[in-house]
Image 1: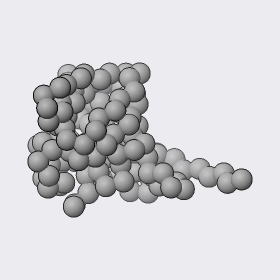
Image 2 (image 1 turned 90 degrees about the horizontal axis):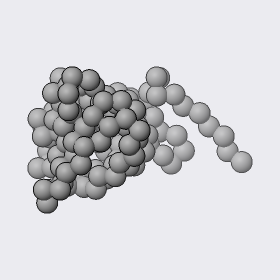
Image 3 (image 1 turned 180 degrees about the vertical axis):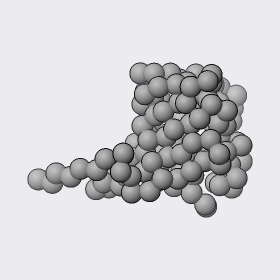
Length: 119
């Protein structure tokens, strides 16, 4: 049996988005988990695209929204607005942006390993 513990309040690393929030990241066992704080006005294509160097987000996200709201728009035009309590899946090939005046805070357990890192 293996037991392990890490705390997102003391992350292994923090990846800043260009001026609009960050991703606190912990790696525990084989899992990389992040708490994203997406400030009002954050948009993937403005605040992460310059870091990632791709035309759209190429991460596959499975996340739980703690607070705030975010719209995710797939490259095919499909879009969903997520809010507190929602569990989301967003496959590679999307843009996203916050909605309203509150930061969107979410926990992502699949798309964090290379998210907001230079390619």
